[in-house]
Each structure stands twice: as structure tokens, then as C-alpha cells.
Length: 137
Image (cartoon, rainbow, N blue to C red; front, side):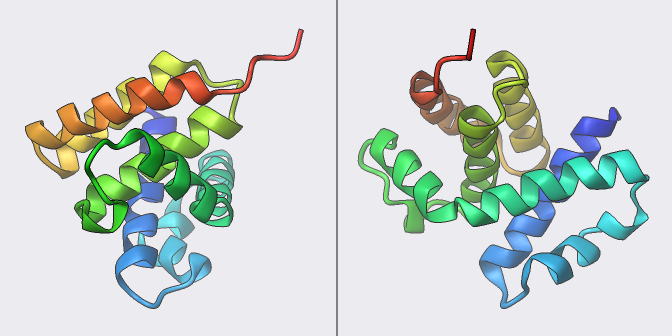
């Protein structure tokens, strides 16, 4: 498994813990295995985790706006966490190509959720990618 995939999977696990328990970011990061990552992977993991948690309300609003007939609170916790992570990368990490973000989200969804979830996530991310700010010249 690639280092960035490992980071994203660790972020997913930490986001899930933060979403379904009373754990804060640091405890969720450690519990998800963040402390066992090498320095570069841990730094990327923390960037994604901290950014996603800091922008959670904004991300939820963006996801909700694209999820026809689905309230974010009613989505499966794993799917909601994957969507938040991918939405953060789409909207706040312009150095990562859109196709990489969506592909990673779908592969992680297939591993941690269901085939139907990956289709659902793909549909939302397909709409959400249009909200990505234009790259600076």
C-alpha cells in the first residue's frame, strides 16, 4: 500500500472515531495508529485530519448541497467520513489531482464500506469537484 493511501485510511479511521465517540483529534489520531507512521506519512495524515475537522461544518454544508435527498446525519458514519476527507482534499488541497482524490475515496469506500457506498460517494464527489477553486496561474 502506498504511503498516501495509508495516510488516508488512517485519517478515515480517526475521522470515524471522532464522529462516533467523544475522542478529540489527538486521541483519534493515536488510536487509529497515527503514532506508528513514519514522519512524512504522519505529517500528511495530520494535515488531512486537522484540516477536515477544522472545516467540518463547511464540508458538511457542501456535501449536503450536492447530496440530493440525503441528509448528512442519516448517511453511514464511514461514508460520511470518507466524503468529508475527500471533500477537504478536493476543496483545500489543489496540489492533488481531482482524479486521484476521487479514485482514492472510491477504493477506500470499497474496502471499508460497500459497493453501493462507492457508487453513492462517486456521485456526490462528481458534483462536488465542480466546487473546487480554480488553480492559481
